[in-house]
Length: 280
Image (cartoon, rainbow, N blue to C red; front, side, top):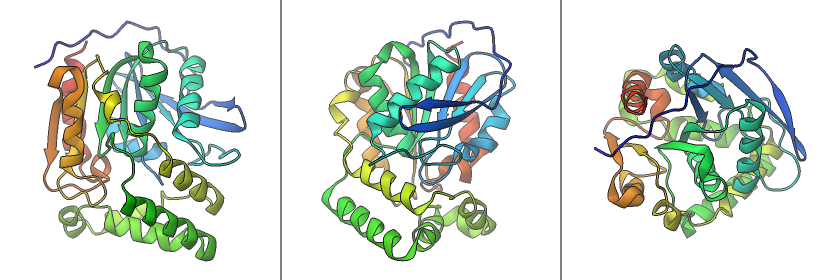
């Protein structure tokens, strides 16, 4: 087990539903609970409410900061591709506005990409990093081709066909079989406009290779992979073992897909709670 760094004690703020201006976009974020700060970044194409089941298990002990990434939920998209650099800049401003100098961070999919960018920019603000169904590698050629096809589909038919397909294909087969209603639950959370979805897809296609970045991470790292994830495999996520000289708490949920934190919130929340407690 890696040595864990302790959280700094903070006096919690009382506001819960603020907005802020970040360059060309208004960014929404929510704050729940009291205690050591923990930031949770959702996957595309959901918003911060993706974390509702997890937040309910953690907000009695932690001060949760839950932004809507630009273009998602109540956050504006701004101009041009939604680059991970823009998301990281937005996140830094959210931390400032929430009077949070340092926090633990949990990112799912695109949320993890943003955390890697923030680490490059401001590692002093990061007390610990958790990645759920995310990876440091850039898009491979087949994924780039798929993103281009997604953009073309959105331009021709809107977001409906893409989001319908994602709700089916990215939820693990096991959970989809046990709880078929989860497909609709997640589908209704996919609310990006066509312009926003195109900008996010374009931004993801240009994200840098963060594999070298992982080796520079010196804070505790936690990773959860979905064994049935059709987008990011457990093999992809093993790259996080390069952090802290190979010391990374790494878990695979064999019967979870890309939205593991929503599919199996009890298991994920229990793993996250244990990890966070070790740093108190």
